[in-house]
Length: 463
Image (cartoon, rainbow, N blue to C red):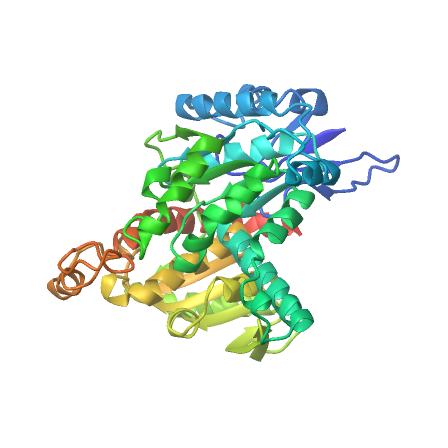
């Protein structure tokens, strides 16, 4: 038995693994281990993989499929310690939880998880996925943090609706019902190891429930391993009512070791510089729109459909796109980012389309705060699902985001009110733009990788 990886020559990028069983006639039977992870390329025997992330990482360096990176190695050593600490670990069973609730069982001390933060493109996702795939348990989950929180809100909504129907809308018990404990219990029953990619908090609705949710998860023995661009103390920085969020940071630190991975190298952009085919065009280039249209026609020729509008129902709402063909979406920035769409809508699109063409992307700045946020969320979602992207924009990729703060934006920040209701605090609005500025580099890095032929080949191997 071997685990097979697609080949990315000499670049420590992110990866996705799947097991294969060699049959007598040479056929392969894939069984994916980690939905939503990336793809790389090597094959290690299970006796190496079973030793943990360190042995697997060294094997890939030795085979020439990864470059040695001392910063990554230090993070791998931390992950190996986590791997060793959870060997033979079993969280509390339901019967044990009942005893705990009755006060007849001592509090369980679960092993600590790991929170890895650092600059974009350094390989955080790759090594976390490597760790996930080497852990020997079926009760594990690898998930993008945005998708996880969307699922949490869906579960909360479903439980509240069910409780109201049973209790009656005028019953005070329905109003005071707390769905967090049963939601956490359901998650813990499914997975005691959760690996979060892109742990970030930008939504006040998420921020206000995280402490209660994760306190419950940790009390149920759940272990968290996460990657983020921010250290824990900077999560939800300058967010509305952040004082109510701060206790969560301590909860996270109490249950996760913290490690910084920052090698100063963006491997995604390094890979993009070696790519021959272009999937990002600027309107300043001659024939750019013509080339985008040619690619659209080429993709359509492989679909069993006509070019037509399509309507989708997402969480009870109708969402219409004017130009689709099979599993190819040809849209504009205005249509996909300049109307009230969110992570749930983009997640649904990533399940329907294998290629998304986005035309007319303007240079994004703080004046276009809401569309810029949607664009960042869109790219994060498409990247995590390995959806192919073709873009035509007003500016080259490295200048797609303007980080300049103009006088009008600064004036709006200066007169805003913070969560302590003190007027005149520049960092007082829901976000001052710092969160967007921080996310710009990640988006540019991901778009760089999404231009490569290797990234385009991921979709086929992941389906």
